[in-house]
Length: 114
Length: 114
Image (cartoon, rainbow over all chains, first blue to last red; front, side):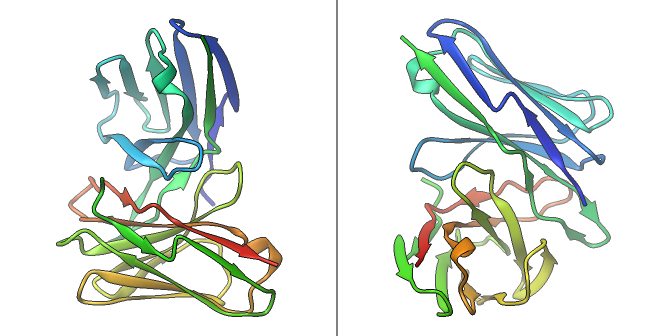
């Protein structure tokens, strides 16, 4: 079945440093979504990428979708303590008339040292 | 917040029992998906309901079943509970539209099986 690999599993950074997490799917995706989950919380939607090669920005966050629609990345510039949490990518395929559910990566735990 | 609610927030059951978890979707959303998130892992897709019919299923046994109702509510039922069923159960509602489907997650139900 479809697999989504995400690296690194953990990332320790000093506040103010940049952070990047990478996501790779075993199959071509219809879209990829990114979520942030705080400890004890639930996944919160950040963004969805649909088009090949798409790049989207949200303030200090930059999201990319690969040309082959199989990989993606999230880059945070100048991290702040509020960025702490686990970042998940989730890929989706469309098959026939229906949609597959989201296939999540295992997440990257971002730990920020002040 | 996402407008998606779940009940109960926490639940303790014993092995072999049955459990029903409930979700209230965003008004107008025609699709609900259920996920299981074990501690330290990414959410795993259980199944999806579209207009009250199962529209897709992940790698979960038949003792995981669901229902979706016309009033945007849904249920996840798990029979013959096993210890490994202990997890956070998340529902996500969405409006399917071409290749774009943003899923809005509820706060989850934390199930502990003893």
